[in-house]
Image (cartoon, rainbow, N blue to C red; front, top):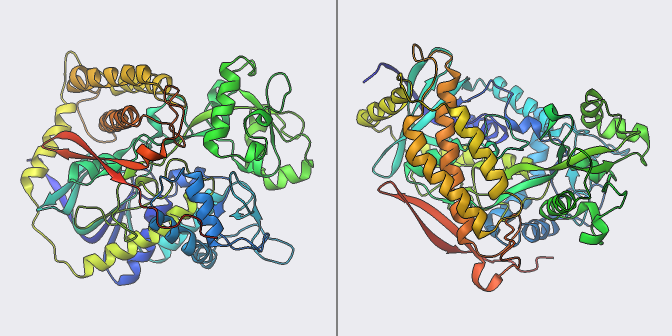
Length: 567
């Protein structure tokens, strides 16, 4: 066994985005030792890239809005695949979580009467998206970072957690690599909150950062938890396409919320053909498919996109409410007050993930909790814009609360050092010199291309089988040869971390593809051209995965419909 540092803490939170930091803030109120570990530097999590806003039925602009309408919009938007108990908790607690952020110091845009401003977002009946211009996620994360620091929560930066340690169906700790010095760390803990986010890096074009590699979903699966709805990956309708260096950068839904319109190369406002009622504010799944259809059928721009225009709006309104977009495109040589933006869909958000049993956020593994994009159930088959940030706050708060309550009633359990030794051997085997090594970048480039072409916006059996054949070949022939260039040290060995992430990406991609093959219908973000209809008779159910002796097994779980028409 290699040397390691043993760190003991009551609650271990893996991930320092909106969910993880909100969990830390809540857990710290229980007078416990709380540790947050982050793969990145504090404040650099993907939450900061959420731009358009955060949903809560405050009724500040449209007084008739309430939690019941928010609930109905969410489950209709999610194509009724949502866990309705989770949705009810989300929409009822959303206003209080907004007020928490205000209390922590977040600065929202305001109405003339001083109330928080709210804008329209896709598939929402009323204007309920609170915002800070178009950098809402940045403001939320910066606020949470400040509050975490005020509370004195211990944050470990640049730490990669590679395995959860278990004993008799419960989590007892985790093993990690300190990227700064290459040392192994072993955390001994009573409760763990998983909040590592999404896995968009499995696709060639994505709004996600390099860190979005599905780590938490695989950690949970290997620890004995279940994952579900893994076929449900959202493609955002609008990302930058030009210049090539900007490809995939998010163009916020706030652009359409403020009145932006979509045009093809012929100048046609084509959403009239796809959704004449909601137009550009249809659900993200519908707008993404419309954009992609226009591009694929030859009505796109010269750079392979469609036009998104705000040139008809007041330039001062654009510069005030879309500050980030204005600056983002200006750097690319486009003044969006005078010229349209070129946009196309990109992989954006994972609705699938770890299955939590109820609103306590606990999984089927004792002591393991999860929240945010880590989990499934809240958003169903398609997430509404503005619901991701409020998800981080509602279920981040709950994850921290229930993890802390669990920890207060538990004692530490002895670490199984055999698990530590096996994990060290696995990691070090990648870091050994190999004559026939395959570097992680090669696998990732091939994987992202195959997934984009065969398991993207439009899917069918032939394409999905092609993707699965590739993934199985990678698992059998390439992952055993996975190697890195610098085998002399683990200190700041970025390629070693990329290799471990690559394994997680391949395994997450397999879950997505296998689930997409099983679901022989179209629902939300999952669109099968060979099964274009939604089949409520046979498919109003989740596909739930687990590991049995290292082999993936699945079962079906019926969707529990508790409320049909709440208003």
